[in-house]
Amino acid sequence: MKAGLPPGESAPIGSRREVRDLLARFNTAPDGAAAKGIGTERLYGPGMVIDLSTSADDVNQALVSVNEDDIAWPVLLRVCKELKWKMVDLETGRSFG
Image (cartoon, rainbow, N blue to C red):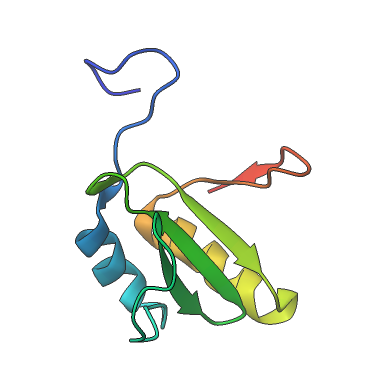
């Protein structure tokens, strides 16, 4: 936990622009279409979709939806290892990274 943060809160992982730039290294980016909804920015990657909240410029968390297990998991593991991020499966509570 970083100093100055209330208990239970995490430090931002970066601005939306910084997060997009970091994930671009893993072939994950917006599709270039106009935003279809208000409140989230959608990034498409190998076997997955990542939604970032647009309610603030800083990103504290992202929602990852896996649609191709065999393709997405090796990429997600590499993202966590290289960027030192942590992921939690909301259905099982398991975490890695």
